[in-house]
Structures are given as structure tokens and as C-alpha cells.
Length: 184
Image 1 (cartoon, one colour):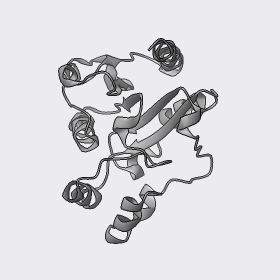
Image 2: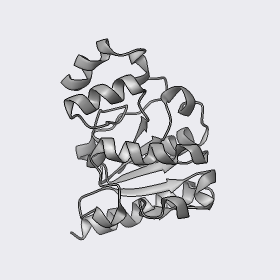
Image 3: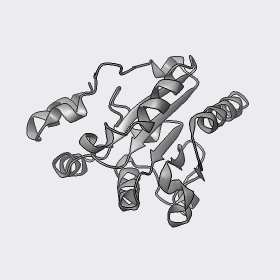
């Protein structure tokens, strides 16, 4: 745990929602992998942790030696307020890595009311919200899940949408990114 989160946790309600370490969670050393993903659920932990799609992708991706996948959920207002006041970014659950340091940030969209949370999580992460403002080195921003069937409302903010089951698509995206990174 990084120092900033350990200082904030005593100040918020239910800090365990930000600790990770649940049975089945996986933590890989990012310096030893070639592609890193933040699997983002744009709602609070208590809502997102029961989603079946996220753990399927999480375990599928982490089964690949050269990929590290971590989870992130939208913070409750108390943590969001403290992060903003202190100028701290939103981080992943497993390693507390800022979302802007991942190669890919992939949001699962389960319902339309979460779209504003996608934008808020990008803003809290320091990732430029508008796709046109992102530069090389910024993560790819993807969406998937049931609401990705109509990506148009988020088109200006995402790099790509995965339509349908994401298991094969996300692995192919990671393979292509791995090749692209090796060519730099």
C-alpha cells in the first residue's frame, strides 16, 4: 500500500472496500509484464464486485504470463473528496497504481447511468477525457459490456468499444499492443 492511501483510509467510511486482497485476487509485478490493464467498473465496489464479467476477464488476462490485470471501482464520495483535495489520482485495487500508468483502462458498462462515472474516473486519474487530447503514453480507453452495443454516447471519450463477449477480443487487443510496444 502506498503512503497516501494508508493516510486516507482512517478518514473514510468502510476502508476495506479499497484494500483488495480478496480470495482469488492476483498481484503481478508490473516491471515483469509487457501489457498492463486496469479493469474498471464505473460504480462502487459493493455494486461491481458481484458482476460476473469482470472476474472472468480478470482471471483470463492474469493467466497470461506477460499480462497484468488489476481492478478499479468508482470511489464513494468521501474518498473522492479526499483524493481531489490532496491532488491524488485514482489507483488500482491490487497495487495502487494510478490508472494513467496502465497500458489499457477498460470499462465495463452494465447500465447507461454509469456513463458519467466513466468520465469522472478518467478525470480523477489524470487521463485526458477527450480522446483527441490523449497522446502517446496515455492508456487506451476501452469500453465493453452490454451498454457497449451503442458506444456513440461515449465516442468522443473512448478509443474503442468491444461489442459482444470480450474474452477473445481483449486478448487480441493485448497481443497487438504487445507487438506495438516491442516495435517502439
